[in-house]
Image (cartoon, rainbow, N blue to C red; front, side, top):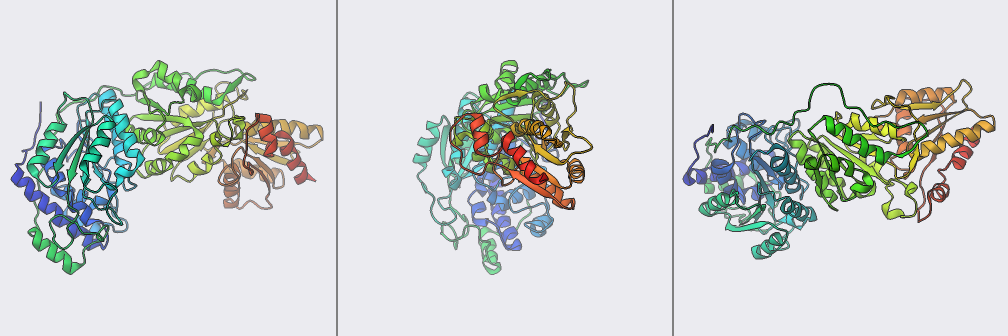
Length: 624
């Protein structure tokens, strides 16, 4: 059964567009900042959309059948918030007193603190890639015919991520994805690259596999016809609507003039604009509501958690292999788990999940930005995404990871082939910044297992971790250290060697933990007892165990890490101990300080001073 609101006629849509322009001016002027002219150019596009085509239950934004509206040009927030007023979910008072004010929810760029906002936008080039993830869920997982409408700016079409998005949208035949490009010709500091050359935009979008419609973005009839055509289900391509518009449309003093990007109109000028636009109004209009359809039942089954893969102590197993094994195991017990990869699944071992659950695996090829964005979009639909690639390549998607945190997205990242341990491939493939990068993300969890049992356990834990979580895995196969069933709580660590006469503490993770164990053996032959800590949880960190070790070994700590010295294990340990007020700390920090080249693992570790011999030497220097 269909429940619908009355679909407004175009005359009403025209009145709504006028109100949206007026309110965009009013709210930005009241705040003393904002982007009114960028909002005014797209007012007609949004008025027709929300009154006639966007199927949305405004009283129930969690309705799974709702269409999705994403403002990729997030700086046009005055327009979005004015839409919320026009649909009756935000009051005029909040619009005028809450926009861009401290502690209020109408932030300068949209975030999901508002229930009608799916993802945070404002860093350009991200809304459309996020929309790909939402559309993937609709077509392949939920199997609900909602549509994903994305308002894009013409300036952000210079971002490579927009073309990654169109490429993947065409590859996956996302006919439920509609990009509306507001081609208003003017960027922040002057004209955009292509200005009003819609034919050039069209050639590019068509080359990436999209269906393109070109319209006058201020002609309501053309807009309406384009939206109807975009929802034609007989075409399995994503649609790009190129709308030629005027920045500052409707106010002659700023219309199509440079120098007004991101500037509110002064009070007297705003008053003139409001008069020219026809004055204030308080129309409340809603468009069609969605069909009452439920998504395919992919609720996680109740019951005991799935059995993890089993490994015997002493067996040599790479943690990246344990990741693939464990992901496949937990994926079998939870149909909401999905996986993505950047065309290195045979190295990250996500291919194991793909073989078992191909309908829940999405290959993003060598497009790491789109991979992260798709994970964010899938999380909007409450899926549990794991995205994997070489750890080094996550750096090119860092802005997307950062924005995922602002979006309150729950995504899980796994980076393999980290550090100089990978050997002969050389520095272009060696992640030496990833721990610092992910530690710096707001609310993140950073994990670094040293053996297969720990890695498998952490994968299971990551399923339930909110926010952005990251696990660093190692290329080489190293001995299993723990018995099957060992517990690895987030925020914990493991003390592998200790005794009443410990003189020094050795701390490592991944490959350096194995080097610490070898160093402890060498020190023992010299009569020096060393405590060894497996710091598998880098953030949050086990401050209590570290503090105990400092007390037991008179502050003598050696931290060894296969990472640059900035922001990795050593930084995490020092930050924690300093915050805890640990006295008399004597810390020796071994890290990758020189630019590496090619060579085998043993050569690389020795050259960087992070092998067992150098760890033992550092410990002896502290004890002497």
